[in-house]
Amino acid sequence: MKFFKLQATGNDFIVVDARNEYHNWPRLSQLMCRYHFGIGADGVILVQNSPSADLKMSIFNSDGSKAEVCGNGLRCLAKYAIEHQVVDTTNISVETLSGVKRVKAHLSGQQVTSVEVEMGLPVFTAEDIPVDIKTGKVPLLEYPLDVEKGELTISVVSMGNPHAVHFLSGEIATFPLDKVGPQVERHVVFPQRTNFEIAKVISRKRIKARVWERGVGETLACGSGACAIVVAARILGYIDDVVDIILPGGTLTIRWDGQGSVSLTGPVEDVFTGEWPSLE
Image 1: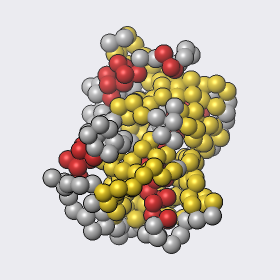
Image 2 (image 1 turned 135 degrees about the horizontal axis):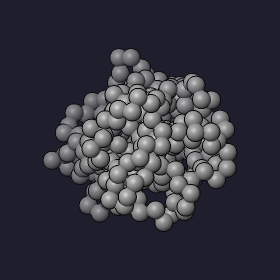
Image 3 (image 1 turned 120 degrees about the vertical axis):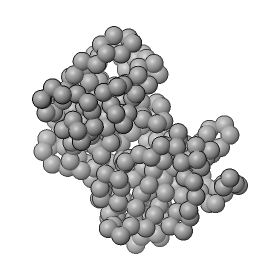
Image 4 (image 1 turned 60 degrees about the vertical axis):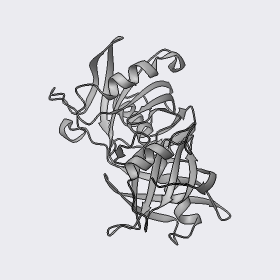
């Protein structure tokens, strides 16, 4: 089975044209995403036909679980689909589990170099995130959450998938994300688990961040996570409408006016292509 590996700010994915492929994708994603025994990636993206959009994106995390949406993954899908003539436009509609997303690619010659994604409206209601916290407050900001290291405050939002954002004043590099991340991801208040972001506001236009991604672990970037950080920071009054989120894998530019859809723009690159030798 032919595959294409792409990365978007270090968030790497195995892209498969699955319009005529039918396999045990959860199991295959576990095998293919292994870094030492497989291809190595944060997830597998399937390019599929859609009755309601130009294409459908199905995404499986490295642990085999299915994700609702992924901003970085959408950029990788767009680059593949345009450069391999799956579509004949640079403005693509993509069906995801969290609805149809609009994607606009920017080209240099025949190559897609960056992609803008309309991620949609942020969701704040507890049952739709979902989160089992009944405070009566919408949005849910700076909620005290008990973890082993003590108490930390989180702001909770869905960008098509659940996110818990923690703003800190110290250095994000020294935060024990490998210890706290799994505790927040699987905390009892999150019935479907959650992504977890730690963020430090540098200025009204720049934020540094790290991400613990549900079903994956720490990743170099997360598009929906960057959007969640901006939404929480904007409501808390920390930032302006356009913000650069500086992640270990690179920088994403997020736009949100506090009311409408959240927009994400960032680079995307090919890594390599090959054939997976076995479908067992």
